[in-house]
Length: 266
Ligand code: DGL
Image (tube, rainbow, N blue to C red; front, side, top):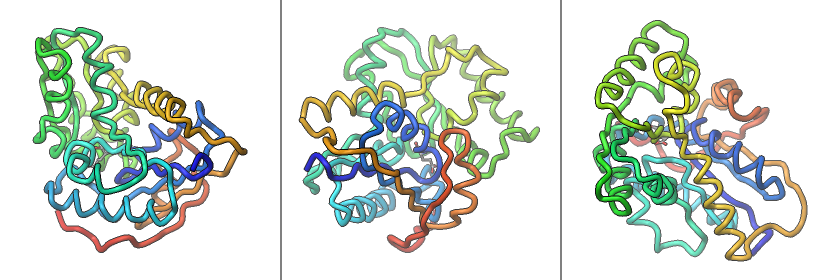
């Protein structure tokens, strides 16, 4: 089992913000990354659609005989994880549930969360953080435009910058101590976000998520014992755009297009 691959997925390039950290700290693993670019954006889909999509991705990873799946995607962690978690015999690491205790342990009084519509509507971060720190007030804001901004590399457009500033200003008016970037695409916007607020205001959950995964793999004696592998990248459409947008977090130079399920409509 130790030398089986680790699957990691998201709707597109966003999950590379988690993968790059994981790869840096744990290079001796056999990684399979799947970016579901055909079904992007996930944030505007229903819970049922997200369960269907996640199930097909888990089945794909099962066919690759993985030992663990990293749900780098906040949206599917928030909506599909609870339903699917007991159907597979590999380890499943959902980002929201894995990092919320670590955020709650900081004892913040007021924090903000930026995430997709589906994550915000599920109150995923709010519920998980308040489970450990009921006194923490959590303000939630959906930023549905940001995924497309990142995937299409539009972060320097005037319209994008205006939109980002609007959300940051609104959240700052609530006097929050931190803002969780609750979508893996959002850390790609750090340069723009930092124009309107100090960079250390933002929490990128990838850091504590990766520490959590590594500790758990260690404790479960599941770390790879063999050698370094080349990570493999799969997408469900448009590999060229994926490769181009990937550059900020990981230099993907080859992505294979595969079809897992048909396109699920928004
Ligand atoms: N990046 C994903 C997340 O962390 C999904 C974004 C989307 O496709 O809407 O939620």
